[in-house]
Amino acid sequence: MSQAMVADATISDVGITPNARRLLFAGFMAILVAGVGFAIRGAILADWAHIYGFTGTQLGMITGAGLTGFCFGIIIGGLVADKIGYGALVAAAFAFHILSAVITLVVPASASQATAYQYLYWGSFIFAIANGTLEGVANPLVATLFPHNRTHYLNILHASWPAGLVLGSLLALLLGQYLHWGWKSQLGLFIIPVIGYGVLFLGQRMPKSEAAEKGLSFGEMFKDIGILGALIVCFLLALFVSGIMQPLLTKAGYTAEQTARAVTISNSIGYCIAGALLVIVAVVTRFSIGAWLLFMLFIAHALVGTVELGTDSWIQNITGNILSPKQGMVLFIWTSFFMFSLRFFAGFIEKNIGLSPIGILLAAATIACIGLNVVSAINTFIGAILALSIYALGKTYFWPTMLAVAADRFPKTGAIAISMMGGIGMLSAGVIGGPGLGYANDRFAGQQLAKRNPAVYQQFKSDTPSRLLGLGETYGLDGKKLGEAKATPPSQRTAAQQAAVEADQEGNRWTLRADSAIPATMAVIYLLLFIYFKSIGGYKAVHIAGTHAAEPIPAGAA
Image (cartoon, rainbow, N blue to C red; front, side, top):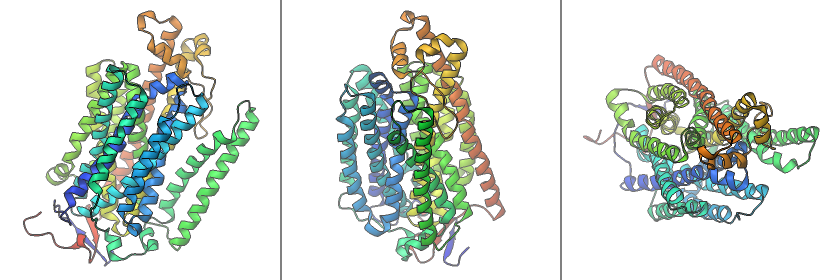
């Protein structure tokens, strides 16, 4: 360990500024906005599919945009936070939230599928930029405010995410299912918590990160990230750019050869941009390779984003298909409330049970893997509650605990490392998780129906092929026809409609089973990290000598 770093094995609730609690609550409200918008959007996916005829993959791309834009907000915000201050970033996020509302809510019901897709995609993308910018403020701010108990307070901060999911889902259930409000009226309600976080942040002074307090240069902050860390961001960015370019370069009526050429050009553009950024990082860091531990954390967090947020974007739709839409929404609310409650106990687990943050992550990944497999087998509402509780217990501590580990072990990176980590998680969820589950659902549902009844498959087969990361082209079920079948009471469905609904349900189950491989992989990574920390004497937070975080804790405060 560098002589400029000091170890800290003490856990304390003391904040370093008098307004620490207010700033914590302001950050809580900021992330609450993201949860509210995410939940309502998840609840109205079926409306969009029915109105505009979107396929599962198209819906996945729109929900993915509600995550990928986050990456740009949080990474850019993290890069400039220590230079321009948190207040300017909060103001920018506020403006982006208003702009996203305008773009999303002006799309007419009579719009063509292509036009509606563009409005909803970019509205979701800008909404995500605003959310990412705010998290680029909240994460490093809370990590700075509570340097001796980051796992606990970052989990409290991120309890706002499931709280927003609960609030948004309850609003969607009440207003959509019972009062029959349109999707625009429901989605527009996220403006209320936007005003709330604006008021709470207004006029508040915020402390600098340890790296900024010490006066480290941008290049010095970036050294631990280095080429290895930037490589992960650049790879995901290449996928994102390629996904943006493909629909712009592909036209209706293209032959297979023309489509393949457009895909190749799109991929080339994405990788060229990503390569140029990687070269810039190499020059800025003087060709620093980066810390291998941070590289492993970045890989693990890419998987976190895929399994947590990617799955969250589909889980309500999936359980609603297997049981009923209303039961799916109630289950989603229960799962989110359970997560909200559990996140207040991260400090208790660390302090009283004795699990280190890495131990918490290892246990969480194991439980999440089991939970997804159990959820895939649900048939009753009570069984679904138990199964989803197992899954929720597993996924609860992933995101905030990962941020705490990065902040604990790499304080010299300032706001950059944890902001990049958040960006990696969201970008992975957007370009792999959300679209991946949509693609899997299209593939499995199509395969099930084609196997059971080829004639009905041809009747319900989508005209739009689904593609993802070179996994091969597949044809799922037409969203509009499937939506009409689901909207028809079971006793009145034709045999073809019933076969399509049952194939879609079975496709949902196989999708969840495939998804469980991700937390299984994460468990292996966390086990290796657990062994590593055991070999060096155990997990400890470190601080930069001479900063507020490295100062002794007041007597009686621990």
